[in-house]
Image 1 (cartoon, one colour):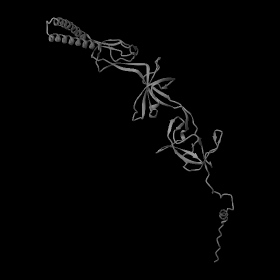
Image 2 (image 1 turned 60 degrees about the vertical axis):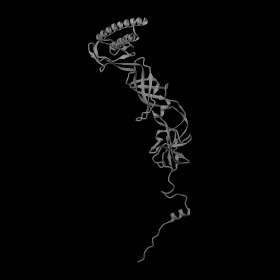
Image 3 (image 1 turned 135 degrees about the vertical axis):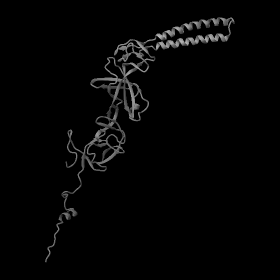
Image 4 (image 1 turned 90 degrees about the horizontal axis):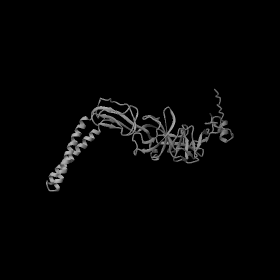
Amino acid sequence: MTRTPRIVYAVPLLLAACGGSDEPAAGGGAPPVMAVQVHVLQGRPLNNAFTTTGTLLPNEEVELRSEVSGRVTHIGFEEGRRVDAGQVLVRINDDDVQAQLRKAEANLRLATEAAHRQEQLLAVKGVSQEAYDAALAQRIGMQAEVDDLRALMAKTMIRAPFSGTIGLRSISEGGYVSPTGAIARLAQTDPMKLDFAVPERYALQIGPGTQVAFTLEADTTHYTAEVYAVEPSVDANTRTVKVRARTRNPRGRLVPGAFAKVQVELATIPDALTIPAEALIPDIQGQKVMVMNDGKARSVRVDVGIRTENEVQLISNVQAGDTVITSALLAVRDGMPLRPAEKKGNAVADTVIGQ
């Protein structure tokens, strides 16, 4: 049986081997170059500002308590009203103390007269020095007893330690009070304190005299406060530093305990290098960006500074004029050939060849 020879048509391969055609074979040739969006770094002014949360506190606040136990004989304030420093707020029955004080004062007069006579006799050698010293010591002891009773009687009158607004009372006239029971709270609300925390990296940039702005919930008014104290240490749990500012409150619109949104503005950076936030790539070793250099991608480790809502400041390993890749970051690898995507107005004509 005669077998028909098998003919293989290899003309295209021969032509390709001999360079007989300038057209690449269908499906062959070099892969297309990816087009990506880029951002050219340029120094520009950047406000060094950030937002944090805080709490309003009274300038001074105290819980009023009695130092002695006894029956309340007089209440000298109205709930929720303003009181002045030194004003008598509560009187406690002191009849027994007054009786003891009168007795002690009478004994003091006798001891004083006795000491005076001993002093006259000592001058003419009528008594010994020891007798005079004993009389003098007795007078001093009686004076100390009188002073002690006067101090005890003063404790039966509870006075306002500073001017402010007093809250709701927990006692009534005729009731019994003791050091363990609260009477009321007294708060000074003008000026007010504003407590807030700042990230550790800003700690050295904030100090007494720094101005901050803040707003309250359901209040469109912008308030200002001035920092007057900064905690000297960093909180190990939150890595923040506690800051305290003071603000005026003449109209009483600020209420202790209120939540505040604090805006802190520091010095403006004149030539900051910023990129869109989505161009920053975090990984296990830190953070990096992809830059385009001579038409190829290259990863660069960077340190970041200020973060805003849409941008991030780069502070290391880059310089003005560098081209940072901002799109297709999951597909870009070191050494990959790239080209900037063409832009038409504000719209990007293409992002990847073939799309």
